[in-house]
Length: 221
Image (cartoon, rainbow, N blue to C red):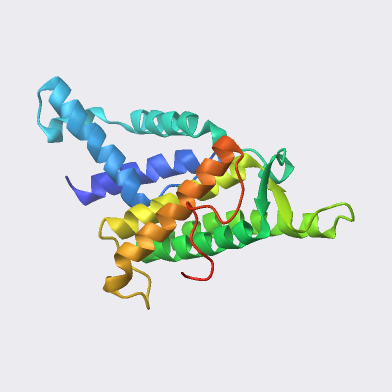
């Protein structure tokens, strides 16, 4: 499949997501579009080159809109700073989540083209900023319990997806950030996956006792 065709469709797909404040790494977007080409070629019993002619920009935009529906729990396009804060996180888990997002951002950045690096940094920085602002806001309230912070579930779900995507990149042979040796690939992927699963568990069940088995040990044990 010509990279120029695929790159143009990835741009359309990601632009449609970005219009609702959502982002996806280019590798995953490319996999989704390529998968759609394969499926269409099989269904129509035509070559993939012919199937690509049926996959116009509007169809690619529809694919992005379906993805937005699937992640409705992340409240695409909403101001998450104004969303209800109902999920409690102990301070230790707040720190772990910030660390996991920062690590995930480095993995994503190592796998993006220079022209798209700014979007990656902005995406992750927004999530990190939200976590930091909410933590600071809670700490400043006289009646707040500094040992536990309430967060919007949509923000935590979005963070979990970002971390999970980076785990997939690390596990499936993506580029590693500078300074991380190949021997650490499986551990990095497993740690990020563990943190992402922990966030999903908490936002789904409301269970936030710590130290839970789903999260990394902050002491590295």
